[in-house]
Image 1: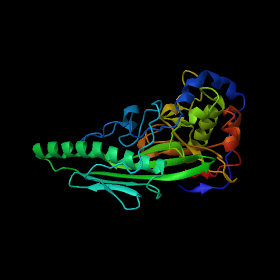
Image 2: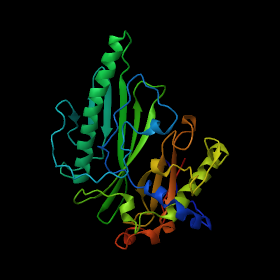
Image 3: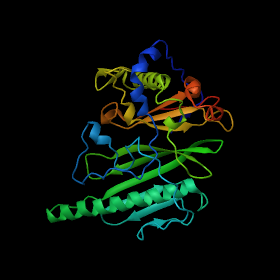
Image 4: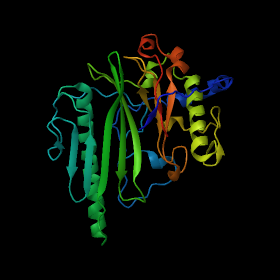
Length: 314
């Protein structure tokens, strides 16, 4: 993703007061930290529908409130048919029903963060292999040509501060529908122990009106620039209250880098296609600067944030 060097100022204004009623939405902005708790992939003949069910990602977790998984055991053996590259930077598999590749940042075999991602990728592959084979066999039984599934996942570090690292995952997945789908995931962990946490765990209370408004205003600006209208499915964007429609529970958050060393500059908030617009509109990647929510952080996390985050280009 391309980045611009100048941050976007998001004016909360008096709308923050109105957002107090929307604290529950902010809970949905917590990081999805358990990619292994994944939905079953759609059958090869299924076409994703343009509604909320369409982006319960086949590849990435949609359970934002699941308890954190324990760190993976370094060197844990993968599925016997799964190929892990010698440097541990990829997990791959290919047969007539499925082509799978997960790219993972290179690093030591005993790195607990990377070991978790390798193990998680192998676990997801095991699910996909079974479902892809079933879909292929069903198609052949019905006299149709089997459509091979194609899954390509890439994980990358976004930032590091203190003992904590943040990684962003993107997945392009084609399972025989009308078109491929792109999904996002996030992983925040202690680099030394591998212990995971959600961004919500960094907040003093369960919810931040400032973040709700910041995300909403950033989405409005991105929508205005892309489609010339601040709407979701032709309805005006509403930030807070009972009619709020910014789909906060479907956002994936990673920690953003900073122009200061050893600091997080803010948040990157990713919306998949269909979440806040039709498929043709694509996905949105938003930037929230740390100064907008710094006071909402727990005291032990405040020193990890500072400076300005590069702004993601939509």
